[in-house]
Length: 230
Image (cartoon, rainbow, N blue to C red; front, top):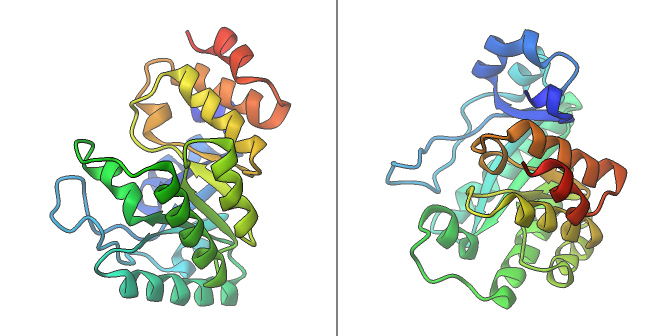
């Protein structure tokens, strides 16, 4: 369905990649090589390495991704993981994507009932996280949208590497997702990596087609909603 919907690639764990390799032929593969917490776990920010860059290369991945939480209690461990992974990726010639998530964004990500940060606070923290990710070796930074094109432009202009938008929980309408994508690209985003905001929708192939039209063809969010939101 991802291929049929026009996705450029998949972000996937290496164990899963081995099971679906025949289905993803032709798509780019970003290998998730960390992740030691689940949504029901009690240590959601303790994302440690679970796979090696060498194994990702051997399995045919095109890039690696690690999750890095900034402003949390174990921030030092997270940043050390990023630096060490960046060094390992450089040795193997493997591009590294860093998913840089600041503490302010975690309030809505893991605990929707908590008071949400203001756009100003979120923008400040996301900008910091993106810049730190680039400075510690990420080739591409994936991070949360700050709420408007104006504020997200501060993120893309402050980072020295391409920035792509993370999707987050599947709470908004398809129209809102398309609008966030259009506004983010207008603010300098290099693309999007969406998970639940696509695959939890019953019309996910159509949503993917709409996202591709916005990202690659410059279609407006309004036009994409008319053609692909049903």
